[in-house]
Each structure stands twice: as C-alpha cells, then as structure tokens.
Length: 393
Image (cartoon, rainbow, N blue to C red):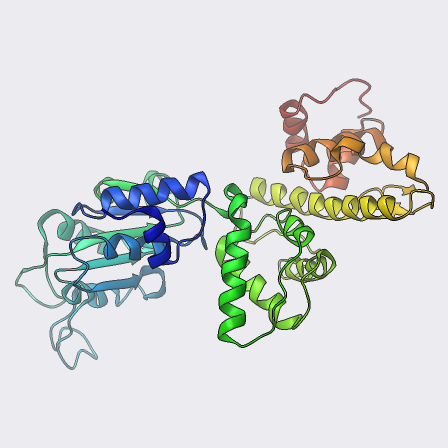
C-alpha cells in the first residue's frame, strides 16, 4: 500500500493542507480499481499531476499513459486523432492512422479539457466506455480496446449538460469517481511548501543564486487571489527569482512584481480575467482593492513601528477618498486590531463600512467607488450585517 508521503515524493504533488490530504486519500483508494475518473477544478490547479498519479499507482502502470488535450485538437480531426482512420477515408488520409485509444491499449488515456469535446465525438467516447469498442474513421469494422479513461475539466459538466453542450449520459459515465482538485485560495497553508519547491528547483536547474523569500513577502503574496492557481504562482516565483538575482525577496520586491502582474489583466491593474462572469468580475475588483489596502496597512504598520512620534501621510484607500495626516486618524480608516494577518472577508467588510461612512451611507457613491454594482453592494451589506440606517440615496 502506498502512503501519502511517498506519493507526494514520487509525483510532485505538494502540500499538507486538508484539501490536499483528501485528494491524496482519494488517489490511494481509487488508483488500484479499474474505473473511470473525472478530475475537476480550476485551470492551473494541477489536474494532470493527479491523473499521472492515478496511472502510476494503478495495475496498468507498466503500460502507456496517453495524454490528450481535447481543447487543442480542431473539431474536424479530433475523431481521427482519438480513434484513427483508414487510408483514403478523407482528403489527405494517405495512409492508415493509429489513434490515441489504440496507443493506450492496456494502459490509461487522460482526456484533458473533456468539456471541449464536440457532441458527435462524445457519442463515440460513450461507446468506448460502455463496451470497449470503437471504429476508425472510414472503417466499418468495430475494434476492441482495453483502456482506463481519466478525464479532466475546469467546467461544470452538469451545467453544460443542462445547456445542451455536454451529453448527460457521458457525464454520469465519466464521473464514476470525481476528484475535485482544490484551488490555491483554499490551501494557503501550503504556500511555503509550494514556494520553497518552485524556488529551489528553478534556482538549482538554472544555477541562480537564491537567498529565499522573507516572511513578510510570503504574507503579502497570500493577499493576492491567484486566479491562475499553482501554475500562476510557479511562473511568478520563477520570474521574481530571475529578475532579482542574488537578492533576498522582500515584501517591497513582491509588491512591485505583483503590481506588474495585475497590469496584465487590464489597463486599470485589476485582476478581472475576461472569461469571468459579471459577478465573478465584481468579486475580483474588490479583491484587488483589498490587496492594495492590505499593502497600505502593512506600510502603515511599518511606519508606526519605526517612528511612533513622526507624522505620516497615507491614502485611506486606493481611490484617494481622503488624506490621513497623523497616526490618530489612521484608526478612522482601519481598526487597530485589524492590522496584521487579515482575512479577505474581514478586509472586505471593513472597506465597505469605511467607504459607506465616508459618503454618509450613500450606497450609490459607495458602489461606484468600490467598482461594484449597487445590487452586489446591497447583498454584501446584508451578508456582513452592516447597519443600514441614515441612508442617503
């Protein structure tokens, strides 16, 4: 029997958080059992690593693991790629082709981005899952294949099936077992392990002097939402190391590079990926503002600790709502006991409260400044039980 630490060591899965422990437990339980598996989770969470682990600890580990990115294959040739074709079956078919399923015979086929597969191809995939039979394009003879199917998607396939974009029968056939890979936001306790691994591997393989990340730098990184998950974090760590050769990575360095990262999303430096829904986009807007506010709080804290007698000037929020001229007024912007390790919900609530106070509970102005719709602001006021008196609509 494989234990979790051995799996992590041999597969590159990183972390000790409860969500990762649950995923590892699932791998141990289902890998030896010859059933189909559906791996779900956001883009960049490491679904392919899970698929590789399932194959590695299965009874098919001596055979091939064939990986297919369904979203990268044009609709017109995906059936030929998966099942092969006969010579002369279509223009350009100058010789017979072996498909991915035949190549994976006896082993495992990993169908990544299964939600992008055309409906017509889904019918043929369902047949393979149910009977182990398929036909090459242009052939009239059925062939048998013995393949374990592991699929992955960042889409909600049940919702896709309700919208007619994915076959419901295929969805239920695929998800004999469902492993949901956690996003990075739900496993921040793994941050140190992830950053250490990415840093050491990259610096070693590229012979770069690396002095590590400071505690404050890592704390600041936790304030960012990381919509690209582990893939985005890995790329970010490697970028910082190469651009800051020889330097210990401080909070100031992280602040600079995170701002550059946020600039990649749009001209307003807000993390709003274009493929998100309006409600998700609104959430990203306020998370970005909270990130900026968190940076300012850290700066305030450092200034207070360095010289409590000096007056300091700082913006109360990222929208230049007002100027704060002394330490006493800082408390009007954010409570003393809120300075430090703040959760996103606490910061969000505090930001809404203080912005409402600034505009005398005028929700229209508050929602405009925060970049939220009035409807979303109302919902958050109810969610956080914020007082609704003295409204100035």
